[in-house]
Image 1 (cartoon, rainbow, N blue to C red):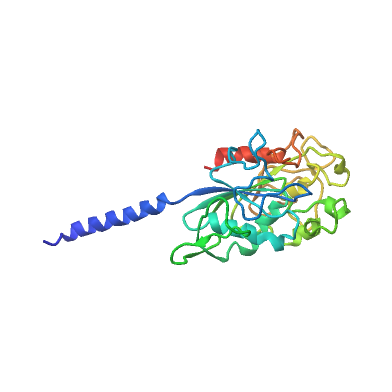
Image 2 (cartoon, helix red, strand yellow):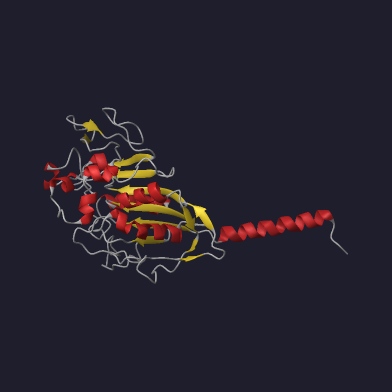
Length: 313
């Protein structure tokens, strides 16, 4: 006896619901961490998504970072922190393909020049066609961190990103690169010159992904070279996502000799704007956070880590 049309519709609805539930069950969120400049320090291995050497491990000194909370399913997106962004951005795109396509979504945290890496990826490749990947083990088998395509070679436009947290962002460059304070033969130092970093890609093009900026203000002796409030490596014009072809001086409200870096997306004192979809969510009014993670989640990175723990779930 054939089922009635009503029963057939009911059974069909159950099948669709089951398929939908099955798809949702496989959806996973990841927390991607993109390192900054090496500066002669130890770096994680390219393509090894479990190597948190740059960031730090457990208080006991472990470099794996396995026991450190830094957001759900944390992934270390390692690049050498030395070469041109254009030559190493494929490593960032590989990680985005691996973990941020299909039904999977990502929260991204970037430090210093890692800001250039994720901004470059989104601006130049964020609307491109990507192969949906099956996330591999946390330690990829090759140096590029490439994951396999899903069955059927499904594609999509861009990546699935919740937001980007930026600690001490260097997408606006640093006067230390301009002045020759760093080794000028280093390819990344050339990228970090203020005029070069700001012209590298359209910083306003984020594919509508919000960049949350965390700006530190514990300067050091290098502050004599840097403009306005700074964390000893980058000034507020960069860490605050201020637009323009060159950097200018911005400060905390307590400094009467410098225009304020405003919170949120609002124009700064003096009228300068921030790049589109860039918002200052932390301004170091107490001047206690410097630039350095020190392989122990320190400096402004510590503030971003707290936000990722509380939000990236």
